[in-house]
Amino acid sequence: MKKIKVLFVCMGNICRSPTAEGVFNKLIEDRYLGERFTVDSAGTHAYHIGAAPDLRSQKAARNRGVELAKLRARKFTVDDFSDFDHILAMDMENHTLLAAACPDEHKAKVRLFLDYAPHLPFREVPDPYYGGSYGFERVLDLVEEASEGFLKTLKADGHL
Image 1 (tube, rainbow, N blue to C red):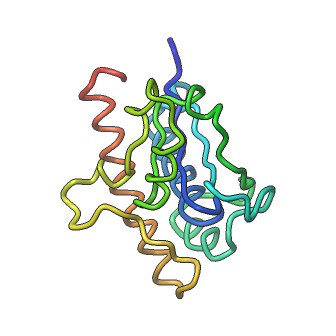
Image 2 (cartoon, rainbow, N blue to C red):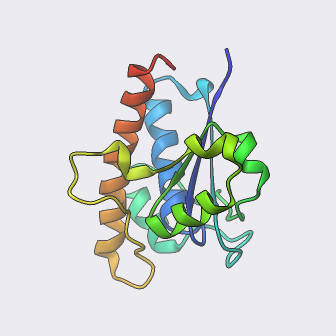
């Protein structure tokens, strides 16, 4: 069976997208679906290539049973458009950058991650980098909601 390949994307790949990668990996592992997926994260900018996720992201995630310490930041590449089935942007700015660079045949793959949590009153996962610890908790809340919604959508569409 073909694996479902999912890529989470934010700007620097040290806060939001690695958090989404970790949360989604935990969700699928907890539901014994890990072997069905390849999950990764990347940044649209090359600010932190090779760096571990922000320590505040790691701490907040660890408090919820999600380990991020082994993840390393990388920059999104044009090959990611063909390598992944779902490319989920954390905010409009990164979505716009991805959509502008995306070949026509892959446009349907690029979505806002919070599109999978339509019950929420907003569409973007805010960048917590310059804020306090509350921002990292908020990111986790949003990412958990969208991860559940994304998994439900995959099941409803017959991919699982």
